[in-house]
Image 1 (cartoon, rainbow, N blue to C red):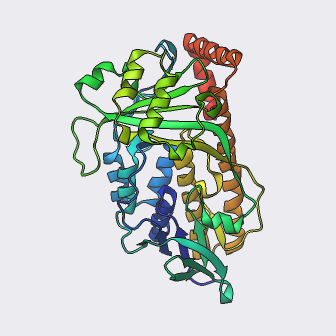
Image 2 (cartoon, one colour; image 1 turned 180 degrees about the vertical axis):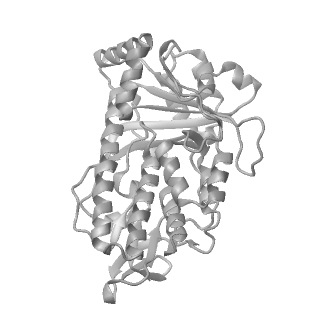
Image 3 (tube, rainbow, N blue to C red; image 1 turned 90 degrees about the vertical axis):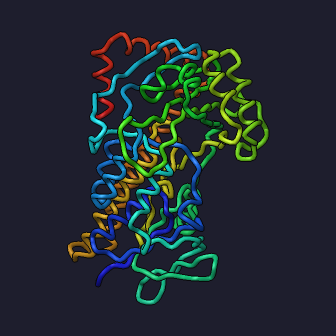
Length: 416
């Protein structure tokens, strides 16, 4: 076939990374985003880009954008810490010492800053205010995408990168499902100042900190700080963020999570952590209600490969996962680099379109749903309501903490 024209639905992390990669490969690409402006989507706090995600970014982004990603990132973590609800140590994992400028180091970055980096240079590619409605096969095998404003676009490939509630997936794979896990997550943040530094657990300033409660409640906490000498026009707000999650049955709440006000959600958390360390309670009490949000944790149900067409999916649009392994965005970035490779080969005449897309989809399905299963297993493990299971988890953590050689061996196995 001739030169490809690719349409991407959704301007999230994976879709924008793919658009950069295709543009760099000389492939015509248009990205359609439902947000009206680049600054509409300001929700969320930070995410951590791991080595896999960083390699995907570096392979797709112009060098200048990738360097801006490095500069915009927060201070690199030095430890991962597990504590009980009284802040007693269960397990501390020391991370390899890494220079802040290292390209592939796992690094925190605010979602707002990363989106700004990814949008930079795509002004002629991204169309805002375009809510996708449906697609259909046009004459000569091309795909037509239709939007709520009555407009349409045509191309050779349509990529659904439109997130967990993907409309593209809904039409392409109506049998693909997302299920509620029964876990509710509530998160908030408070700005860093001398007073907050004085009460926050010391571990949060070294890296991700997981606090295991006595009734199946779990809190994640971490600080977002920036190196003292830097020059960046990106969001550099420093804060402590926390997220409390628990089985809905234990929370005794009937209101849908998405309908909870910030004040009501914060009160729910405070009720559950009444017997936790005062330092943890103070973090929640002092977080502005406007910063507190709640959502029901959902997870995709794995499906088998489907008959490949010129419409495909990327990231959360297919393999949406729980947040308990912190790999959702990184998996989407890996998908973007894989799909870029496939379409670049097709555009160069080295492969046929449908076989190339089929190979991409098989790898995306295998790896994506492996991540879904791992994330769901981690969620179930740390949110168990069984006192025996909670005791077993704490015991394993303490054994690993006391045996560095065993901890290193398990970490090596996990990375292989």
